[in-house]
Length: 410
Image 1 (cartoon, helix red, strand yellow):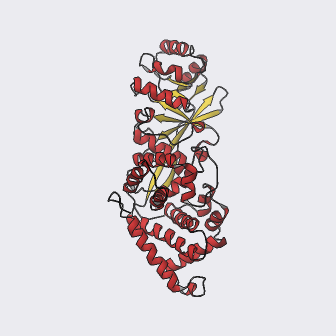
Image 2 (image 1 turned 45 degrees about the horizontal axis):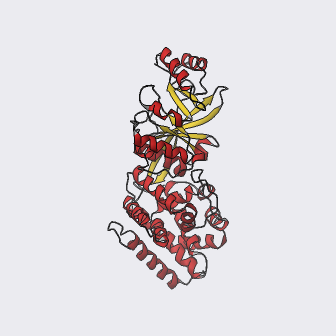
Image 3 (image 1 turned 135 degrees about the horizontal axis):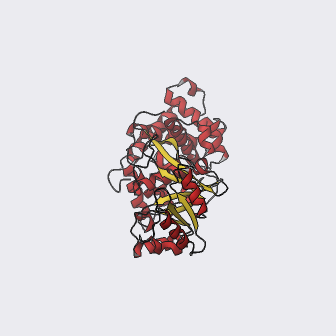
């Protein structure tokens, strides 16, 4: 585990949604600020951003929901497009929160999301709130059962049933009487404490370098995007580089492919998708990264690149090996376990999991140099003076890369 401030705890809760036969058909993903938080402390853009980032990059969607669909709460910022969603429609149902005031902008936003293929759910639906204007676009409507006037609830169910194709979800089922009543009204799906309480998944992730991402968003917004500059900026942010590699292996992207470097991940995702992820991380992240830890991580990655280039190997692939080996140490996850979650090429995966192959040999040499094990390098393939020069060049590159507070710094 890395030093204090280098990592942050990441929590996301999931609550099952059952069908009439008692089978789990979906999960709602919920924000949690702590591992023992019973209720969500926030239902805002911060919460939504953290849920999406945790589910699709930090924890992993397959670990959370398997092959089932997940429901994610959306605030107004996401509905109207102020914050873009970097996830594919096949993996989620978007819940429009009951706290959103439905106006022309919201209706246009819901239509746009629907046109892009996202299924829409109306959360905590109440007839007369204005949200009935969204019924023509909804695939799901969630109605609270516990504490509701049963005559009014039955009337609402009947009115919603007039809209074809909508599945009704009974939520806030707190006891067996609520469940029985919901079943009697013909609800399609069921969710609540009487069936299952939210289950919290926790992991450890890198704290972000937020200023770096602000610069990156600005670079991505340039009408003429310099791809090499984007790759350089992403490479200088270990947490971001790791997350983008995870994103290429996530159901969020709807793409498949093997990558050996950050450059490959950016090309595979596309600059627009990279910009969406970076923007979302800026909204969701709060803590600053430990500068010393980021420096050490980048130095290892850059030194791996330099040594690999000397040996006529792929410098970008070696950079990725160095980056991910450090990330695995920081978050306390075995490199083999990490490699399984990433769409890595065989040579990169072998270097990480078993230390084998030419890239594994490069990583081993760099780690020996870090330990000051000079004797182990005497008979190695890289002369000592070459190694020392590569190390100094790596330090200089890291120092330059971390001068990110001044916009436009190269």
